[in-house]
Amino acid sequence: MSIGEFSRVAGMDELPRGASLCVEVGGREILLCHTADGVFAVDNLCSHAQARLCEGKLKGQKILCPLHGAAFDVRDGRALSRPAIRPIASHKVKLDGESIMVALGD
Amino acid sequence: MTKENSQPGEARASGASVADTLATDSRGAPPPLLQQQYQFLGDSDIPCSRYTSQAFADLETERLWGRCWQWACREEHIPDVGDNYVYNIGPYSVIVVRSAQDGIRAFVNSCTHRGTRLLGAEGVGFSPRITCPFHGWSWSVEGRLESLPARWDFPHVGDDSHDLQAVKCETWGGFVFINLDPDALPLAEYLDVMPQHFQHYPLERRRVRLHVQKILPANWKAAQEAFMEAYHNFETHDAPNGANAQYDIFGSYVSRFIHNIGNYSAESLADYPGNKWRDPPLTENQLLQSLSVFGLEQEEVPAGETARSVAAEDLRRLIGKALGVDLSSVSDTLMLDSIEYHLFPNMFFFPGITVPMAYRFRPNGDDIDSSIFDLMVLEPLPEGAEHPEPPEPFKLSVEQSYTEVEALSWLAPVYDEDTGNLDLQQQGLKASRKPGITLGNYQEARIRRVHLTLDEFLKE
Ligand code: FES
Ligand code: FES
Ligand SMILES: [Fe+2]
Image 1 (cartoon, rainbow over the protein chains, first blue to last red):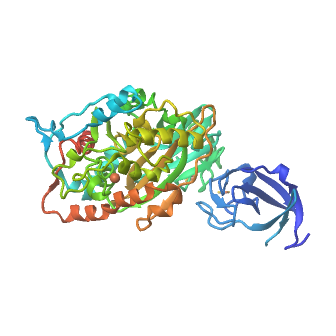
Image 2 (image 1 turned 90 degrees about the vertical axis):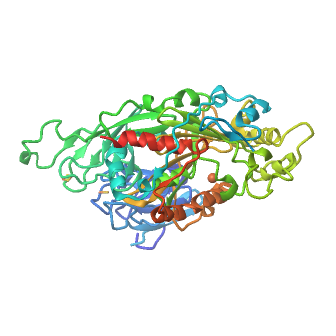
Image 3 (image 1 turned 45 degrees about the horizontal axis):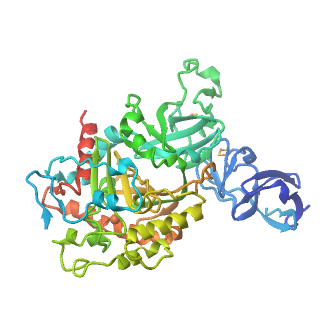
């Protein structure tokens, strides 16, 4: 498993619209988010103090951190509110039939 | 021509009144809409400085915003335990939290250690525990202090001395209201006739279809006052049907207007400039055409019917089908009219079906010359259906047009017209040598009512 290579991480049946799911890719926790705009993948750890975003909540296109409430745009990992300032990494997603494929960005 | 009367406030425009129109509608209106309750409240000028003075705004911050009930969010913004909503008003910030399936609490958004704002951004959030980003103190959704790192250094912090600071919080009509004053009177008293009236058109059975938040270039009072009368319709909207609107004052906190859509009376425009809509008057067919923005199917008014009855019937079917709700017995007035309740100091609720909004106007931080206007479109929810997650607000700057929000459709240009005067008014209020603004006794009485109640709040 190397950077830039797609691998299957979950099936679409595990990720209904509006849901998020934490998966492991190459030993790294990745959060899959199924929004109205499609499926997106970002790092599961908050850029503020490393809380696990899978314990937060997906609302619209935003993932809300459970610890201090920062919001990130799951489409590109952008930090939308304090206390987070830095983005979280966002990863490429491709759908292959019922399979969700992810390639790590960086 | 007007119906002259000896007492101030008794004069009305000529022609059919709202009550006359409702009496001849094809389907009867619920009793609260047949009620008329105007009160003459005086006719002295309102000082311009109330809109322009920093000292006045500071007094409002302390004695109005720190003491009045105001809606923070909708209940469906926080459906699950741990969901929260941050609401900012002037310098204050409040966290509204779903603390239990049937419980909502509110807290000052400030750490009891060294005051840090706990949650940074206004709007929806999720925190099963609220944790301060500075030193990590954390509280349960009930506001109990649960974790204090290096507890040994704080022997002076008691078991419940540093819980979050509670804010009064109650719900009505699907809205969550907060009041920063621990001694505030209960929301029910403040709502006055609203619960009784809105039984007939329950807002808890509405969903947020659209939320638009725009910055307006005027003091919050000037901004909301642009929406409290239909007197401006002729000049601002180039529309014929403002002069016959009905205005009601229900006590200190609640007022209403009913503004008929789909009819007007040519006589009501007797002393307006020119002959527009007066000679010749609009026909019923022309009136129906003016409603085509609603997407009506009918193009002609059959003999013996009115544009109102035809449009109302069309909309019952069209909107009923689109939303999956049964509107077959809804009155013409609820189907069509702009019916607007105002709740002091800054909230508006429309029970109508085609004109189904809620508004909130508030200061934009500490800038006296601008305000934040929240506009929600609240659609009826099918029976038994659950509230869907409300959409994020569209945020518009002063310069942006409402037409950028496609979903507003025919309403967008109307709001552009309404808000287009505000910069001119705010600047004019500052330049005026005349020390006050003058209000119409009837059509602008609701504006005066707000200022009178505001005075009650501002005096110590
Ligand atoms: S760890 Fe996510 S906001 Fe602090
Ligand atoms: S200021 Fe909040 S924990 Fe110190
Ligand atoms: Fe208007």
